[in-house]
Length: 255
Ligand SMILES: C[S@@+](CC[C@H](N)C(=O)[O-])C[C@H]1O[C@@H](n2cnc3c(N)ncnc32)[C@H](O)[C@@H]1O
Image (cartoon, rainbow, N blue to C red; front, side, top):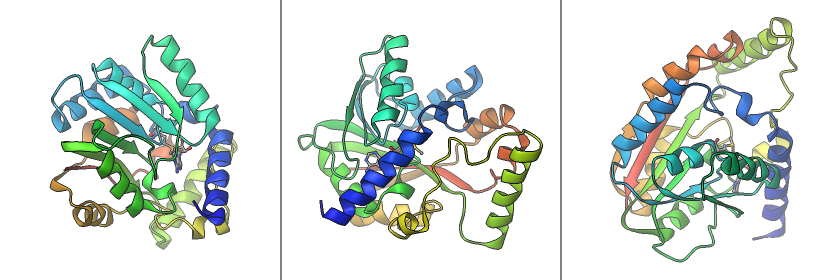
């Protein structure tokens, strides 16, 4: 890794360290209801119906979905660059009595043998990587033949005036109606950091599809996550609901 790249990743890790203690309280991050939990399980059963799969959750954060996979009977490893996000994940895994392996690692270069996983999964990660295409290439290497990459992402700010107005209105509501600091617990990135992240604002579905196809993934499928989103919205304050009308998707491809 080059020195500037190392610096970018240190900055990203620091931002997520700061967000770690409140991350799970946000609907859309932490699972907030049984209905949402069931909606996730239903979705993942559609995407990978087999049991007992070896799953690598890259950029696992506080391990919310790693734990869900473990509950579904899969063998899970989660990696992240933020030690504090991992600490939360480990504490939760203990409470859930799961045997997930959580360890520090770079999602762009997972340090595992070739063909050692059935699924490489990530949620809300591609936007915060400096080299997203390289990451997809490396995920393919650690997948066995027939294994799947499964990505959940979205575009919450496409640079349009409409996105900006929605985000400003959301911050305003949070401050005035909910009396919460809109910046607290959020990992706001500096302009310099943003300029090093090609998908800052969100990774568009068509772009991610291109990453998968150009890396050699086949049988690309997409899912709209409607049931999960409906369940999440039931627990969301207005300030968060008004920014939810953006592209959000699950995409998967097979090696
Ligand atoms: C928005 S959070 C998503 C966490 C988790 N995937 C989820 O959906 O709940 C992004 C996570 O990616 C992690 N991350 C960012 N860059 C990373 C990298 N290069 N390698 C590993 N983790 C990374 C951050 O530390 C953070 O925990």
